[in-house]
Length: 377
Image 1 (tube, rainbow, N blue to C red):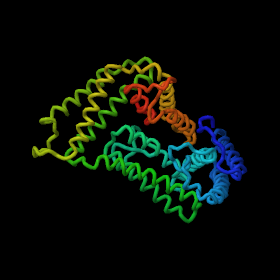
Image 2 (spheres, rainbow, N blue to C red):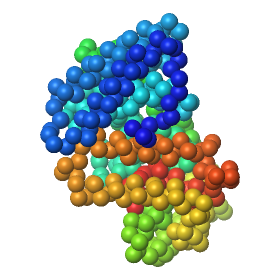
Image 3 (tube, rainbow, N blue to C red):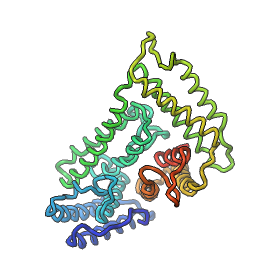
Image 4 (cartoon, rainbow, N blue to C red):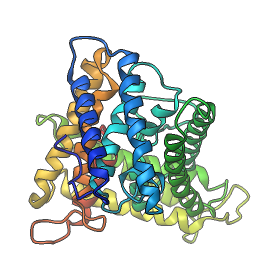
């Protein structure tokens, strides 16, 4: 568990015995994850899960004495960006692993599986469709989506449907799972819904007439970013200049449809959402120019971070292609934690060098794009 967040002192000395037992549970989960010699049995997962819930119950009794029950704590368990306590970090490790184990043994529609699902939400090109090119967002990555400030209404609709499905899973499990777990998962879903509401609000002015243009711009921007990093999959590949220029030509075609700097509807009226669409068009044009000028070359100060991200992406891509038949959901845990540590190294959302200097726009966007979608390209 070397990629788990750094530990801090428990909030209360009474928590120490509980922490010791939870650390033991985490070790058991880790050993079970590493054992490839046999199939994982549901009974083994459920036994560990029951022990974990017992410790959560004991911990909540202590936390309630401080009027700060676990499900309201602003640590990792509440999926906030504040510095979490050691206990909350270890519990997050345990619940992530238990949740992935539930998925591994086929108990996808049970409440514990929702924990990792709130950390991984598939955003597809079309609602109800899951494709290999799906972008993947967690609650933390929804923050990245908000930070990057480009996404399509289809993305948000797909996330909304995923959250609705998870909410239904919690409802079905209301009589068979711990109320502490259900409260915790409910809060995680509420956090995701809150961010989703902010994202939807930012597109509130986008009219139906401009939505197709906006979605095309989002697709082009993502395609440029994918082309920008693709040569890292193989050192033999040259930078795809022609491909990026083709996307840039599409942007100029879209720009050419504007009249006096505005997009027009078929009836020549000016639909709402002009600023949202034109701002994204300008960002796409700027990004395409920057990508063509750099041709895949990244600032050497951030080369190590970028190469690590590319290595994670390449390993995941290799796993999905060559070992998908034997891949367990729990195998993704270590990669998730590595990405967490890279994300946590950012300062106020920015990658910085050892001297505290921020990365330039190209390095920021390339590294962020690879962090958000490690299988990009």
